[in-house]
Length: 264
Image 1 (cartoon, rainbow, N blue to C red):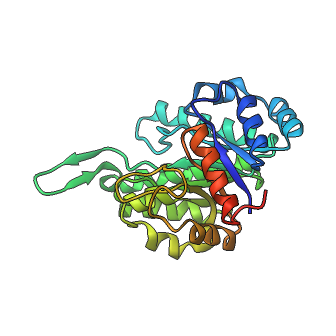
Image 2: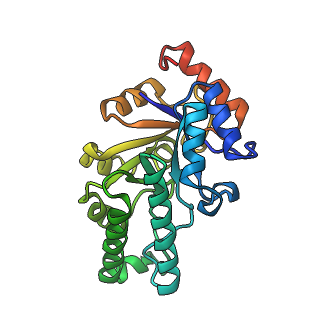
């Protein structure tokens, strides 16, 4: 099984992240495009492939965390589609196997006894925008990059998001990322969806968690880390050790080694 690390606040360049990943004998670095240093305009396939060759480590992308390719505002939606297309083409050229993104719930109106989500209220337009995004990703990836949808800790995917993600998963270009901490914080609300689409698990964000806190170093929370790794292995998924500091990342790698969970 392959393990990677996220781009960290302590990394002052993409190369420094690659060097740290190589030092820890990890397989890849997940470049989060919310960071200024990870914007596509500052990267190139030539640069990323050179770092891959130098450090023996590859890269994946995490798209901007505010990306919403289904927004009803046409100019904004076109901009997000262009950002996604650019990132996936770069990923393909740089031999990145995975591009990850959150699938946002969208705006809602708070009524006396409920929330009314605009993506639910205007379902047909929402699903048309979903299919447009799917087509853009299919064209950009050319079957060489998997676009993975990640669960968030917002209490689980509402029915409108489940329907939309289901449309994406009809395409072989799309898969699922399981963030194990977000799963715990949502009290496993998305677990039935993951079970129904178990064959689509491609990526895992691995860290420890409780029902109130996630992104903890491995061993600091309540999760069955060994069981989660077995789950990823059985799905042939890779795992990002999504820990937020260098020290905690080092401790987590050591935790895996001490328990025979990672043979670097």
